Image 1 (cartoon, rainbow, N blue to C red):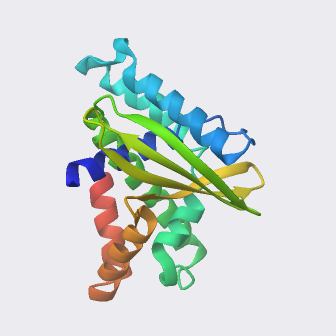
Image 2 (cartoon, helix red, strand yellow):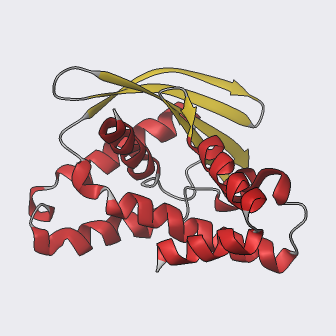
Length: 197
C-alpha cells in the first residue's frame, strides 16, 4: 500500500507537471492532456537507460514550474503559520517547498511500471475544479486520485491531489504543523533545506 501511494503520488506529480503554461482549457482536458504527455515521457524507449535518467528528469522538471501554483501550495501546506511569516520568509518557503516537491518526484521516477490512468467526472465551481481519476496497475487494481485545480490569471493550475482519500497538501500541512509546534518554524526550514540539498 505504501509503495502504491508513493507511485500514485509520483504519477500525480509527473502527470500534472507536463502541460503547456498558457493552457486555459477545461480542467478535465488539461489533466487528460498532461497525463498523456507524462506517460509518453515515462514510456519513451530511448529514455529508459540509466544514463538517460538525467535527461528524463530534466524533461519533466523543465515543464513543472508553469503548471503548479507553488505559492498556493506553499500557503496551504503552511496553513495557519503562513500569515505570521514575513514576505521574505514566505518567498523563502515557496522556493524550498518547490524544491522539495521536485525532489519527491525525481526520487520516485523509477517507481513507474506501466500504470494507466482512467478519468471520471469533472466538477467546476467558479474558480475551483476537481477531476476524478483512477490509476490502474498491471493487476487491474485501482487507486483513486482526485486532482484539485484553481483558476488564476494564467489559467487552471494544480494545487492539490487527493490520493485514496488522503490530500497531499493536508498531509504535508499536518507534518509541517507538527514540526513547528514541537520545535519551531526555523526547524521546519532546516529540515526542508536538508531534504532538498
